[in-house]
Amino acid sequence: ALKGTLDTQLVGESVWGEVFLGFNGLLTKLELPQHPSKDFVHARMKSGVDLFAERPIPPSYLEYAALDVSLLLQAAPPLQEMLAGPTLTNLIQASDSRAVSAAANDGARAICFDIADDYKIASADLLRTMRPNDGFYGEELVIQNETDEVVSLLPNHLRKKLVPKPEQDMLFGILALPSNDSNEEEEKTTVPLDRLSDITLDIGRRPQCWINDERVFLCDDESKLVSSDDIKSVARKLGEFGSDNRAGLDGKLHRFSAMRNRNGDISGITVRIGRNVLGNAAMLMDLLVGTEKSILILGEPGSGKTTIVREATRQLAKSKNVIVVDTSNEIAGDGMIPHKCIGLARRMMVPSLDKQSSVMVECVQNHTPHVMIIDEIGRPQEVQAARTVKQRGVRMIASAHGDLRKLLKNKDLRGLVGGVESVTMGDVMAKEEAKRKQRLAGDEAGGEIKSFSVSKTKIQRGGEPTFEIIVEVRRGARHEWKIVTDSANAVDRILDGVNYKAQLRTRDPDTGNITLELVDS
Image 1 (spheres, rainbow, N blue to C red):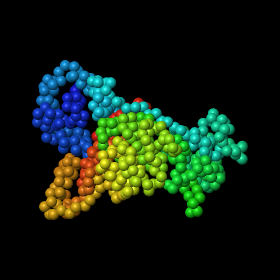
Image 2: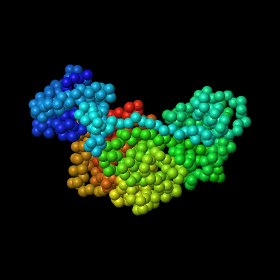
Image 3: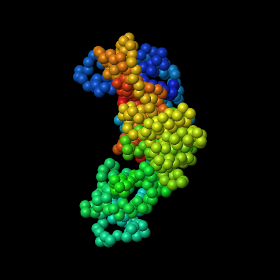
């Protein structure tokens, strides 16, 4: 590992408080000339070109590296004068630590959040060296499973894989329905309940569940099928399904959804296992605590959006008046008393999906929240309600399906990030717009784009985003989130046909340690 080096990015953070200060930015701070090719070469490297793989190395690349060294030598004297004494010693120690952590994390930067500075992002290696007690370094995840009640709803022959063998005799003796199949063989495997996401029961088909996006049948015997009596037994224990065909268990986070035939009879039930994961919002502490901006969490079904929303709610409710607008009791569970996962937050139940927008407005009018939590925005009236809430000065944390690019293609939901409009330009303005896009494309490609078509029609953002921050999550990558801290700029760049800047934050689930990379998306 490198020893005794001085990381210029850590210098920028320590002296000027700029975590992402680049080399040219450092030179500007020191009133020295910039490297004229730095941005060009960086763009080329980001486009996938390995500049220094060619042998012999082209003279132009050697000149580029030589100029880097020359400028560093010019920067050394003022830096030594500025950083004399213990500060320089600490920075060298932090630089050594960062060299080790960067190698261990494939170049990603270990970060934490500076509690003394409103939880702003900080380099973990620097803060541990300078002010170790001021750092929030992430949290170990504590997963709270409450699956026993779900298992107890199932008939005996459908639940054997869901209970470890030592517990089967006791549990079945107390909770099981009478079974006519007393001589049935023990199932060969047991499902790991900590990774169970869904259970699906359909009349006339084999019962199954999903573990890490893989199907697992609950009965190894292919002749054992779900019967109408099985479905009726589960439905009877749940009670009434709502107009959205959903039901729940009192005080629990699990969701039960019914499929019906043309006569309205229940033909299948999907059980979505709900979990509370303490520490799950730790990667967002700078955005939750250090800003007042609204945050939209995007992802496909099963990507963990609701779990993040729950923990974000608990964290914000420690110091804010937080109210959850809870459609289908998805966030805070079923029953009159909300689940403890939302901490001190309050909960407004939504009687049906078509009432969600009106409850959002009622919440603002009647209960003066600082923050409103909405689990899933999916209809135009909810987009309009969110805009109304925003205009009345209430912060929102919400979720929706998809990702940022897909959201912009969704006519019903793109108003969440400002919407899209088409404008017609005159000849002169159209040519200027083409030149602007040519420059943007050239900057991104690391070279000049020779031509760009002229169009008199321009697609642009329609207004200010309702949600300034976007968090993208993916199924199967629960500990890797893409974060856009300026949704307006990202939308503008997408509409211009170029990539936008994002942060890729990754968490070690065992330690809670967080790393960050800046990426083009």
